Image (cartoon, one colour):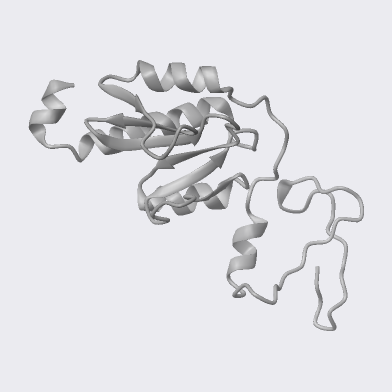
Length: 166
């Protein structure tokens, strides 16, 4: 870790229950981040390679939800899933590198702290949306749960008449 004289100390292999490669160093200060941000970054789960969700599985799962429509309102590459005209998930259909999901504001922060592949929503309101890398450290099962939670969050905000029609 970065000491007071700006030198680095090695991190042990089991510090905080995580495994770091030999010679890995973690600075405790950063020139552009406030001091409180560094512990948040250190507590994130390490990024590891998992089998990524593919576009077909994503489309099949999203289409299986009740009352969902598939649209391309932002161009031919941006696939958007809506329920009663309200977006709950979107992605680039060509690359499928990431998915934007709606989330509860408290969960937005918690998910970003826990997973390194979760960032504030790209081109979205950062308070309510997250971007999840499809080949990152979020397991597919959890990603499907988050898609369902995004759907449920949008449905819960619909007028009663629209909810009853679903």
